[in-house]
Image 1 (tube, rainbow, N blue to C red):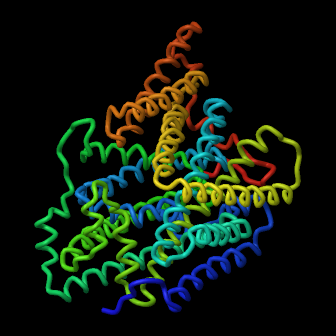
Image 2 (image 1 turned 90 degrees about the vertical axis):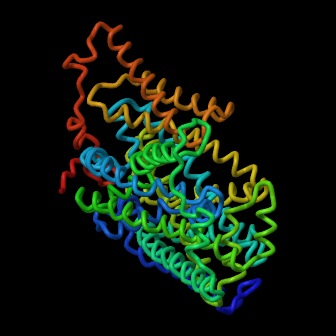
Image 3 (image 1 turned 180 degrees about the vertical axis):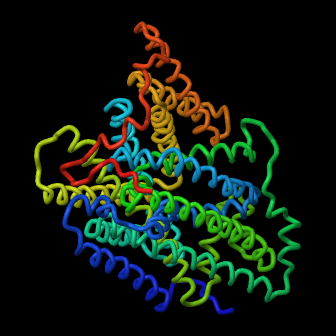
Length: 525
């Protein structure tokens, strides 16, 4: 099979350039219809379930998926992480039955406004700030890592790649708003899936070409091992993997604005629920496909010894995430290499565009409108949304430059920051879904305990990092709930008194956003 050992060649460059131009065209095409802030933020609430589902899938995916999942399966961890995939079904049930309908009926554009409706503005501000920190850092890391892989493959300056990827994403997101993000996400998911299929075909055909026993070698080295029965708190085990994915995916689908904003863009609650199911049922086979790529690459390099791979495996800490990019660079033929690289770009850009658009929405809804509620024209909010999207995009590019300068230490630092900015938010949202008038100070205390516990666990490494969100959120929720009960008792009331009740149904339709034209109370089924 013909391969290219270095560089890209005109055909591969043509594929990548065509992809980038296609994204810009979609942004321009959709942007012609954007006439209001509401259309920019939630597409006038008229999007169908299939497009939204693919968009949610594109946002949930990232370039980290492309490199990390094959790297995990290639490593001695085999398919242990794949045990998480079937449990996403639980997340879909929780979100569609117990979370999403209440966001829709509350009529909120920003999910964090729900926290103010149920608890207090302090909870809203805390969660909003956490999301903004998360979105900029996540966008930067998602921009940096594929740029690093692309630079190594093509011998191109990494800063130039960061600029090109970042600017293209900024342009189509600034111009087209959420609808451009949704359309490009959907197309990017198709390209992403195509890249996975092409990779599997070429890996397996090359293994077959040398008469290697794929299943025999994979079984011999336990490359499809999926269960680790230990319950030691400091080890990677299947139980911890399951718990972590339940807590983290419910947090992602239930508390991250880049996901929940799609629910408001849906034409009905039924369509929004379908989009969640499409997203999760789409991710499960894609996840298995990329784990399979990792195992197949392991067998491939057993049949095709490679000096780079042997050198990496001889190191104390091999770069398993680099195996798939190395295969792309050295083994894939003309055209196919460009398609797979476009898939990596697609995975990165879908995440970045979602973070920029949702970050701008949070800035406007949770801060600008909330604390400076002067009457402004709709044109003013549309201009502001585009300006903030540009600023957030520029910030992501700047931080990506920093990651490129700092290297792996920056990635380690960001993994810690991500833990700090996400753990307590799930506890806050859990308080909001309790059918009681939760005390704001108790909610803030619960968030602080979750934050502090993650910091302590990170500093002292008492448990495996998979347990950080599990322990942090459970501890924060427990402390917050106990504090709430004590505050109610001290005030001379019973926690079960009728005046302490606050049913979720009472939040329906109480948050109309008259300035941007949205209305609450959607109960479309």
